[in-house]
Amino acid sequence: MTFEPTGAFHEVALDDLFFSTTDSKGVIEQANQVFVEMARLDRDDLIGAPHNLIRHPDMPGGVFRLMWETIGARRAFSGYVFNLAGDGSSYWALATVSPLGKGYISVRARPIDLGIRDTVHTVYEAAREAEVQAMAEGESAGRAARIGEEVILAELAKLGYPSYEAFQNAFLPRELELRFQAGVTIPTRPSAKGGARALLDAGTAIEGQVRTLAEGLANADHLAEALDARVAKAVHSLGRLEEAVANARFVVTGNAKVEPHVAKAAPALEEQCHKVAATMQGVLDAVDQTCLQRHGLRASVSIAQLQAESVCRFAADTIDGREDPETSSAATQALVQALENGIDSMHTSLDDDRDQARHMSAQIKATESTLKVTTLLLRKWRSLIEKSDIRHEMEALLPVLDDALAGLVDELAGLHDTAEAFAGGVVAFESAELQRSLDTILSLNTVAA
Image 1 (cartoon, rainbow, N blue to C red):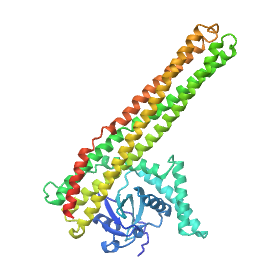
Image 2: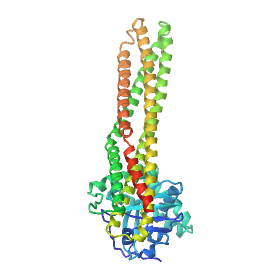
Image 3: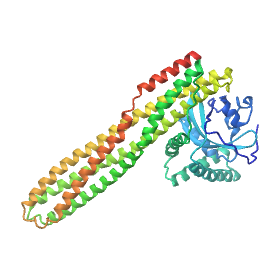
Image 4: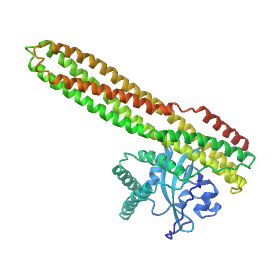
């Protein structure tokens, strides 16, 4: 079954989420009513069909190659997808595909960040053009998709994203923020009763708890910027100290015959500065890794948010009679299983984030400890200089040394405080309440099954 684009467009409603489950090869096993309506096909046409049934011919194969590489490694993938409906109309969707048993579940929403979506569209056009040209030159569709993937990654690199994962970790949390800023709320059915109502209530509790964490992480973004700024200032202060020590050593070495003890002590101080530089490199690496880990955590939380909202919306649609009771039970089980997997992944990311934050703090403390030794050595050296016959020659250099050292001490103290604040919000997140809500929803699902 194939369709031809008519040039018409339709849009996903803000309040809609649509999902489908597939087997390991991408054959559709389940779909909610919203998906049926968006695809503008009969449910019987969708179930048992390959998911690429709704692939728009303008979509580059490189995107799907990236997707299969990611989900094949049992990691979630998110991306902007341009789909083709059965009536020839087209629509954009923000798709998140996650492993589910031996297959996958895909949850789609309306893209909110039109700036990023339009940028992605331009990247896709370049990739698709390269693929079409490659096939015209005799390359296979598989090889053309590899070429398209290379184009996508190269274009993203130009935009400042070193990998597709880095891009995904940037746009997905932003889309979730904009989604709720646009007024999207979880549906309520206060007069409903029964299992679907209980499922809706438990799902709503989970979504609220996860969204609270997401908001806390979003508010901490300015701390990540402050962390980068603190590191940059500390590195600058270290450079000033190393330069000041090198200049001072040059003067005392030139006067080694006059003051051999002063000259003899200079290399030890310079070597200590190198030790500070080595530990500072550890701080730089730790801060970079901590920020990367935090971006991954935010994306993981966003996926859990989407999965919780999917459970809620499907429960509400079941209450409203929009979903077929004969198929809703199996679909609910899939959604709840996906939510459990998403919460588990989020908890893993939380643990990794805490471990990385502790490592960063340890690296900063190690640098502070090394700097204390440097301070002691510098004071002893200054004492020798002030009692020596070359104190007048060093008179202009000593204040520079003092100022550079004091600056580095201050910057490291500020870096320490900022790192603690950066980690604090996540460390303080209490997951016990979330686990209780998840246990409730799992028990409801077990009863329904």
